[in-house]
Length: 271
Image (tube, rainbow, N blue to C red; front, side, top):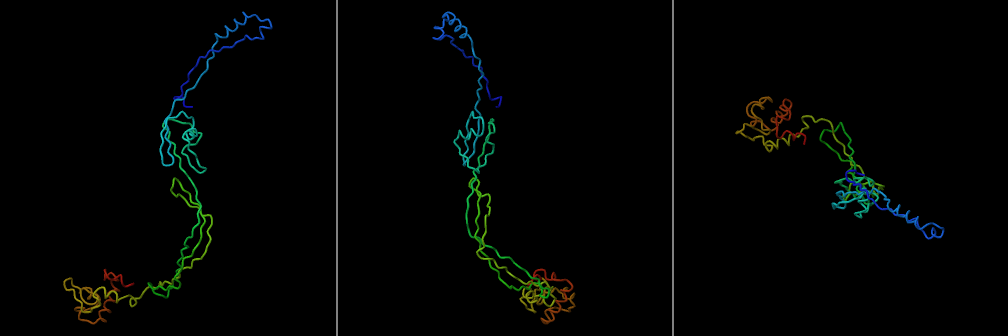
């Protein structure tokens, strides 16, 4: 009990006890003596302490509603009964039912229910890679495309105030097994001759050995700058040489500078 919200009143009540009876008269008891006894007892008083509980403000939130009330209830459970709120076996309450009521108490009730269901679900296939050291990087051979399987699932869904908060699977029965996707992947580094020179040449000049971009100083099938052409052992202008010679000089430049000699199109070497 909260002392600050409980008033203790003392009620003074007269206590009257009659000692006279018809039986006493027949047994020779003096009427005068009976009156004296009655008078004596009638002048006595009984002092009884009485506790009065002052109302407290309580807010209860449940089922999407918020209710505020003043109550003299002693416990949270008493308030729930006063509002005629029924609690389910799985419902959660923010305060224990035996908890004492205090001023401005907030009580939140979360409705919990569980729903069973059965549904078919996809079993995704897995990818199995086999690395082949003899096959060059970038090459892939698909041995099996793979196929998803199918299963039936029995589960229980936990719902909190209308929102799904968890699913517990009770059983899962496979109707059709999944089949793995099998792929062979090459990991042998490419030689210079195995790089995709055709793709790079097409990206740079549409594969034209006579291509010229004199504004920016790039020439030939691989758009050499004159400095790069000289670095690769070339003399003069790349445009004056055949596609085969330009390819040979491009491979030599690759050995010196790598694919970054063609910063935009060089990534196509591994296409």
